[in-house]
Amino acid sequence: MNLLPEQWPQPTNLGVWTTALLALIAVVALQRLLRRAITAHVDDARNRQRLRRVSSWLSWALAIGVLLTIPADGLGQWTVFIGLLGAGLAFALQEVIASLAGWLVLSTGGFYRVGHRVQLGGIRGDVIDIGFLRTTLMELGQWVEGDLYNGRIVRVANSFVFKEPVFNYTSDFPFLWDEIKIPITYESDRRLARALLEEAATAITGAYAERVHEGWQAMVRKYPIEEARLQPLVSLEATDNWLSFTVRFVVDTKRRRPVRDALFERILADIDASEGRVTIASTTVRVLSDPSGT
Image 1 (cartoon, helix red, strand yellow):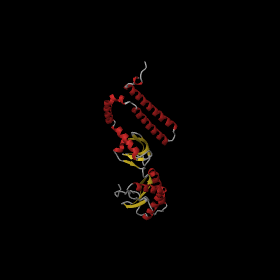
Image 2: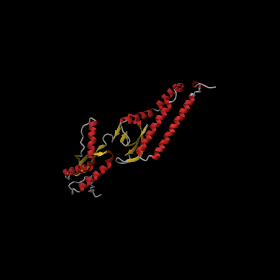
Image 3: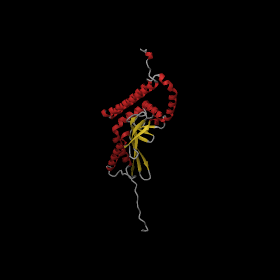
Image 4: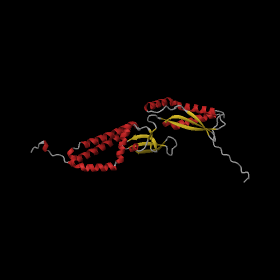
């Protein structure tokens, strides 16, 4: 007996959902295979990270495509159940949903990207990955002095961008103003001390003075901010014990520590060469003998 096409056996709702589930499992398996292949065959870290992200996007797109292929009549009897399930999941997964929304904001808002140095709450570090749910940082500081890695990998939920300020050290202007203090004795030639400090700061930070100027001009064009002094500045404060000189300078965000080291080396060498006209001050403790002899 021949049946007309409209009389052919139609797949049941259960069969539709089983097929969709198997297809989703196949998508997940394919995504894992892609990630393994990328890890095994792509040596460059940045390219590897980009390809992993693209593979994740493709997997999500395939999964959504599979769900869209389910016929409408197969969804009819599930409407109430799916509605209740969706409401429960929205409540239980509100942090996950907020993190996904945060990822969308990060993808379009320019808060930060991979390679930027940021501070999220009390956590400072370099962004090494931005996932759908979390941002991964290579942490700086804590028990390590200076802007150096401490070896910890920190993962922060993307929902953080809605709750706390995001500090970006390298986005529009990848430089910082930094200061060091030099104590000089009152007997020193303070004018010579100021000149030595200004020369040292100019010599050490002058290597990227042009980049600093270009970066700040771009900031002025982009934001309604005033002009700022970009050249080194030396200021003096008289204290009870010594003359305190403060050297203020602009430094590359990721080179604070080596620049400070080079600056101290240059300043100490110049003071040594001043033949005693400039002397570093220090706290002196004088021990007096007991007049009673005890």
